[in-house]
Image (cartoon, rainbow, N blue to C red; front, side, top):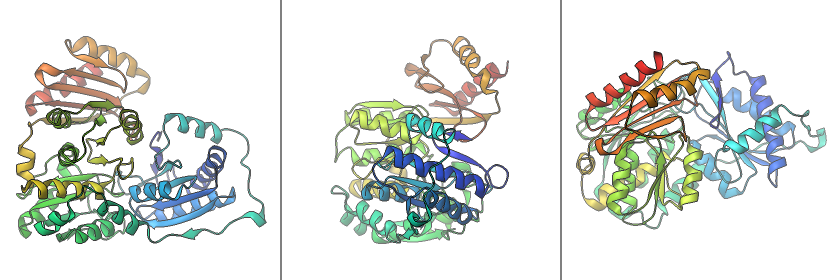
Length: 450
C-alpha cells in the first residue's frame, strides 16, 4: 500500500530488507535534494520485524551519504518532534502504526517534523522512478549515531506547556489503567504518567511487539483494559496504538468512550486556555464541532490523514485539532498526532474541572458512529459516489476527500472514501441514534454493491 502515510505491506510478502534499503536510500537522496543538510533521524516501533528493517533502512540512508541518528524504539511523535527540534533534513519511521503484527511500513517526514504531504510524496515517488541514486564514496560514508534522550526531551516539552496544570494533576493523584499493547508507547507513557503523579495499573507495557490482540485501540479491542479498570478500581483507562500517536479512553466502569471523544475532551480542556480555531477531518464526530461552537471559535474540516489535518491547521491558525481516531495535535508542542500529549491534556481537563471522565463526556451531545470496511474496485469509485449522491437525497455533498454527505438538521453524516492503509473502501456514518447510523451504512453498502 502506497499513500501519503508512506509505504506499508506484509513482512516477507511485499516488504523485504532489500526493498526497505532501496526505499530508504531513495528517501535519503530525496531529502538531500529538497533540504539543506543530510542528517536523517531514524526510529521504529516494537514490531519483531522492526530491527531487521531499521538495519536495512540505516544502510540505505548511509549509502547515499546521510548522517543517521538512531532513536531506537520510540513513539512516532517523539521521532517527529526530534526531527523538528534538531532541524534535521528528514525523519524515517519504521512502523505500521495500528496494523497487525505481520505488517510493517516506512513513514517519511520532512525537516518540519511532518509527514510528507501529497506534493512532497509525489516528488519522492518521481525520485524513486528517476535516475540511479548518487551513492556516497567509501571515504564519505558516515557511521550512525544514537540518541537515547529523545523520550526524555519529549516528556519535558509536554510538562513545560505553559497552560498545563501540572500541580493540579499531581494533586489529583489519578489512578490510571494503561494498555500499550506491547508497542513503543509503554516506557514513555509510564514515565509521563508517573511524572504527573498518577498511580498506574499496567497492561502489556513491554515493548516487545508481541501484540496480544488487534492493536488498533478501538472500543471492541479494549475489553481487557475495561476489566483491569473494574478490578483495580482505577478512575479511567488509557490505551495507545503501537506507535503511540493515538489515545483511546475507558471510563471508571470499564466502558470505552469512543476514540472521537479523545479529541473533543482535549479541545474542551485547551480552548479555555487558548482561544482559536479547531480543525479535524471529515470522518470525525460532530461532537468536536460542538466543543468548538460552545467555545465560540471557528471550526474546519480537512481530508483524512495526519498531514492533511496539520496543513489545514497551519492555514487556519488552529490551536488544537487532530483526527477522530484518538489522534490529538497541539501546535504549541508540534503539529503531529501525539498520544502522550493527549493523555496530559485529558488529565489537565479533568483536574481543572474537578470532574471524572464519564462526567466530562456526558457534558456533550451523544452520537453514535458506525464504521464498515468493504472490498471495492477503486476504478469504480467515481460511479459509486454518483450512485450515493442520487440514492441519498437532501444531503450536503463534499468531494474534497471521497464523498461526505451531511444532513445538519438531522445531525447525521456519511463519509465514504478509499482507505490509505488497506485495500478497502471505508463507510462511516454518524447519527444521534445507533440504529439510524447503521441504517445509513446499510443504505450506502446497498448502493455501492448494486
